[in-house]
Amino acid sequence: MSQQYILALDQGTTSSRAILFDRQGRAAAVAQQEFEQLYPQPGWVEHRPEDIWSSQLNAAHVVLREADVNADQIAAIGITNQRETTIIWDRETGEPIHNAIVWQCRRTAGDCDRMRSEGLAEIFQQRTGLVLDAYFSGTKVRWLLDTVPGARELAARGSLAFGTVDSWLIWKLTGGRVHATDPSNASRTLLFNIERGEWDDELLAALDVPREVLPHVAPSSAMIGETDSSLFGRAIPISGNAGDQQAALFGQVCTSPGMSKNTYGTGCFMLLNTGKELVRSKSNLLTTIAWQLESEPIEYALEGSVFIAGAAIQWLRDGLRIIGSAADTEAMAASVLDNGGVYFVPAFVGLGAPHWDAYARGTMVGLTRGSTREHIARAALESIAYQTSDVLRCMRDDSGINLTELRVDGGAARNDFLMQFQADILGIPVVRPANTETTAAGAAFLAGLAVDFWSDVSELSELWQREKTFEPNMSDSERERLLSDWTRAVERAKNWINAS
Image (cartoon, rainbow, N blue to C red; front, side, top):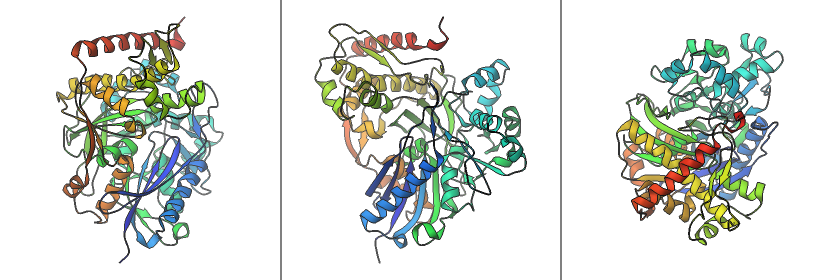
């Protein structure tokens, strides 16, 4: 019998990836395709939906071809995706009515201000676990329906479909036969009651979103549909689906309450598993759905969302052009004794948790004639760790849990300087797994469980292995000094574009 695999489709903010996982949970082959980022106005970010689809399909074909694997060897497909990014398309033609509005986009910040002034923030937080912010899908949906000519009339007739990126991919993969999402993605829309596990009519009314555009909500691990046979030569089950950060939590096998992971990607996202308990944050963190396994209750997490992490390093490369590649920053940061007093707050699209300041902007302070590009590179890496520290402090306050370790993944988790500094500034060990493809692994694990590729969660726990542990070695006084200066820098970045 030929080797069997799970195909994970990892649709991210800047690229689409396809990864084949074997029964040992190893990434047997990887393919990746980048696509264009669109910035129509300052603070606005868009993608072409067809770029998302074509890059993801191409990556899937490339990984199968390069691994010499055929469709008969694929037991199932799991999907994980950039969350909150919003797409609306015509159900009959399959054509999007507008570019996708990306999670980073701030165009609806004024709408959120207006809704907060109307006293709506509390009901949204109670029902959805989210803060009322332009980050999430709800106000993006309303903007599209209000802005695209004829969209509201079409939506009222049931002719339009709204989806986050997972729904768009499922629609395309199934040839338009299935319009679905999962609870983890639904919980990021501002439209989903996370306690009841269903779309909320009162929230839909507040955002003027008709129920007719919404996808069906299926468990994160369950049979969702099958691919159209024309795509891969046969119909392949689609049986796993979760937003990227929840998928990474599952891929890190943080399946017990009190376990936590941090993903270092375009943004930075820390999740703490709280199990079947819905823990409400008092510190401006998010209460979110982690996943739902088939025939099981919904499970929850606390989340801290940092908007700009790896994107700050991309800016050093593409904006300032002071590095050739992201990997250069590790040696550059290590080449100087310290940050030289330079602090970089990468609030390019505002600040996420725990500040939620849509009007903050990127700031660099502490520059002197002695500052070099090495100090700036170090400050950019340190900013990622500082933002993570701000989130972890809030998680401790909200949950009462003192973490004993932090599991890490994502592209920047390969940077040893950053991981050591992260351990130092948190004061706890940082653990990097042998398999850093944890987001895709989570999608694969969810899909594999639904088709008995793996038997249960305990089998998945045995597959997880640590590659390296970074132990903290910074003194308490030094940690407090650095964090104090970081806090001062953040205050200077806040409310910048509203400042007189």
